[in-house]
Amino acid sequence: MQRRRTWFQVGRPLSPRARLVCAVLSFVLPAVLWCVVSYVPFVWHPQVLVTQPGSVNYLEPGMRMDKAAFLSAAGEARDQRKAVPQGVPANPIYLPSPDQVASAFYTAFTTAPESRDGQWLHQSLWHSIQIIFWGFVISSAIGVPLGILCGAYGAFSRLNEPFIEFFRYLPAPAFGALAVAILGIYDGPKIAIIVIGTFFQQVLIIANTTRKLDATLVEAALTLGTRNSQLLRRVVLPGILPDLYRDQRILLGWAWTYLIVAELIGATSGITWFITQQARYQHFANVYAAIMMIGIIGVGTDMVLALVGRRLFPWDRALVKNE
Amino acid sequence: MNRILDVKTRQLSYLEQSAPVKARFERLKAREVILNVKNLDKIFRSARDETTALKDINFATHRREFLCVVGPSGCGKSTLVRILAGLEEQSAGDVLLEGKPVTGPGSDRGMVFQSYTLFPWLTVKKNVMFGLEVNDHGALESERQALQWLQLVGLERFKDAYPHQLSGGMKQRVAIVRALATQPRILLMDEPFGALDAQTRARMQVHLLEIWRKIDITIVFITHDLDEAIFLADRILVLSAHPGEVQELIEVPVPRPRNTAQCFSPEFIATKARLEELIYSAETEDESDYPVVPRLTEAADNVE
Image (cartoon, rainbow over all chains, first blue to last red; front, side, top):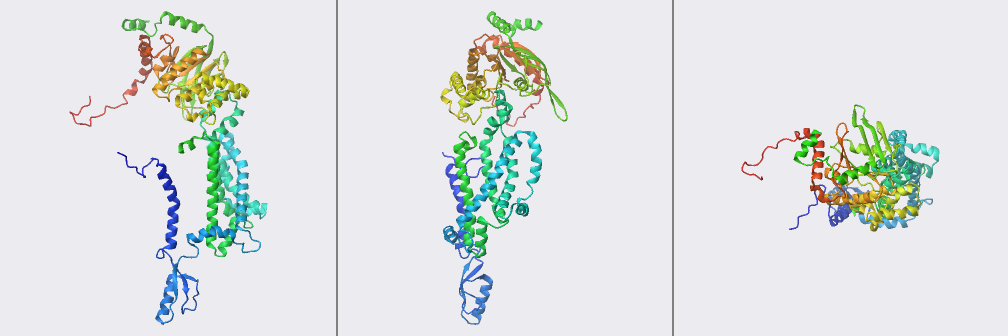
């Protein structure tokens, strides 16, 4: 007799099929919710989109108004035996329907910028990606070596970590004005904010990862005659590499979360500029599309990096276990 | 002396050695001393108190001797071997390897740990090459020697496998040859078979003796398994707990070459009886900690 498999049992791994189903549902469920709110007229729809103004002179076709206000206007017209205004239930303009956002994914790229000196969407995106890239590279160039040194040597750790522990509580955007004063209004301060937002966490996380390296591996290396100066390169670094790589993937995600704040500093640029422009012209479908693009680029990069990591570290047990 | 005669009337004493065994021990003691431990103390100091882990340990090990160290849990046997390896510093006393004091870890003392300490990012072959490379042997020479060592433990087929692909017994075989590859004078083993299942462990014991017979290596082997100690050792160093002191250095009267059938031989049984007497007499107070379990079944419902 086959035992009934339950999906809700603490500590029990799901079957591969169940895992896939859950993963698909995690995207499908919010989408379904969005569809219901958008396409089922009696769910929410707090406004009315006027189709026929009728006799009410302040109404225009295409106008949105609160349901209560519309109903009282319509009631008044009916009482006076004049033409009754017509309308369909609608959601506020800031909640476009899924099909509008879906088509915006294409049209956002083909729509010319509203202002003459404006940028096309692909240019905005590319600019944002560059900001993230340089912010992350600069932060990593210092943060990764420093983190490893802090994790490996107590002296480095005590010399740096108390200060970093303090500094990481300072919100990166707070340095915006300072960054503009020092680095001008273009890309400099934006990259600086990403660096400030990432660097301090990076040092602490990587120091921690380094400390978690199995101490007996270091001891084994010592008993094999490894000199102290060789330990870092021959044992510590290769030993933490897969975890370090995983940390970097998570930190890259954090860098993205600082993007919007960073791009608002000085002259607004990149995807943030696109989003604020589109919101100003009430093209909310484009706004949603742009926000989702950030998510897609972020998750996409992470998935590619995860695949690359699997190739780079065939010995990594954490990966082997999941397969 | 009294005790020997007393035991002799009932059964064979562990102190009695047959002529070939006696001759073997004479030859063993005639060989040069490799490891000499003198008045070794180890005190762990914390902010509040200090614990004496080892107190006045003295012993000497001869070239190609197989020494086992046993003792009740908490007797500091692991601490002792870590001091010998140079991974921990003694509070007082000396460890002399071929007359020279040990000041830190080095490739003249190989070590095999209980936990699997193969480098997970290196293949089996590269693991064995590690010690050779850090000691400035060329890459080609290291590889040639590593393959020879792997052949010795029958793992050359797995030279390109990663450690996580090996079974526990295979991992420890690689760990042993990795430690031997730098040609240390002495091999320190800290409960190396403790994590293995009983069958694999028995096979590894036979295999280790085979390796030990064939190459010039002195072994100091920590274990809490008394059968294992008797099966492997020339001499057994018995430590007591709190503080760890040498109780006795027993010369195992079981003749060599050893085989698994010998564990029913009178010499084996006598040695084991002596070890149990030394080790478990110190632990008797523990037994009162186990309570008598009250009956929770019906009076007639008996299983024994």
